[in-house]
Image (cartoon, rainbow, N blue to C red; front, side, top):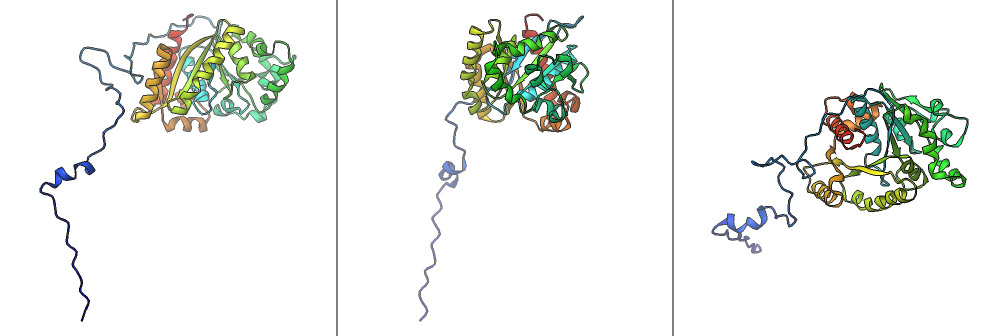
Length: 324
C-alpha cells in the first residue's frame, strides 16, 4: 500500500493583501530628519550646497602689478581630503584671474610635484636644499609648473629629514618664512601644500602664512580631527604668528545625493559658521584623470563641473582676502 502523501495546504490569502503586506513592501521611514530642499523658495534666495543662501560672488579686481604676496597653507592632519588637488586647481584658477602664483610642495611624499607632471626624485635641488643649505637660493629651486603664471617649489622624500635636522636649529619654526621672504615681492599668491600631520614642517608652514584653508572631506572621520587642527592653529597664532587667520573651510568630495554628506556639511556649518566656503567640491573622476595627465582640471577638462567649482572658489577666496 503506497504511503499517504498529504498535499500541503496553501496559506489563506488575506481579504486585502495590499493592506496586510504594507509593512514589508513599503520603505522604512528615516528617523533622522532629512535636510530641507535646495530649491529656491518663492520669496527667498536659493540655498547652496551648504544649506545657506548662495551669495553673489563679486568679480575680482584686475591686477596692475605683481607682488605683496599672500601666503596660504592648505592644512589638515588627515590625509586624502583634497589638499594637493585644491592647491593645484585653486592655483590654476587664480592664474586665470590674473594672479601670479607660487606653489610650495611641503610634503615629503611629493604629491604636488607629481600632480603637475614632474618627477621630484630626478631633481637635484628641492625645498629641502633651500631649507638646509645657506648657499641655495629660491631661484635655484623654483621650476615652471607647465601653467603660465604658476611656478613650483618641488619636494621629495629628502624633506622628511628636515623635520629631524630642524630640531637643533635656532628659530626652527621660522625657517620656511625666512627662505620664502624673497618670493613675496614677486608673486601675488603663495600656496603651501602641507603634509598630513601637525609636526614641525606644518608648524613652519603656518608660521610663514597669512591664512589657512582647511580642505575637509564630507565624511565623519574627517570631521572628527578638525578640533585638534584648530587648536594647533590657535597655538601658532598665539605664540609664533599673530597675524595668522583661517581663510575658510572647504568641503571636498561632497555628494549631495547621500544623507551622510549632507549631515556632515550641516555639522560643519554649525561648528564653523561663515568660515565654511559657500563653494563645495563634488566628487568626480575628472580629478583623478587630470592628476594622471599631470595638469590642473582647469586645463584638462576646462568645461567640467570640477573646473567651474575651483573657478568659483578662486573668486570667493579673493573676495575674503583683506587686500582684495
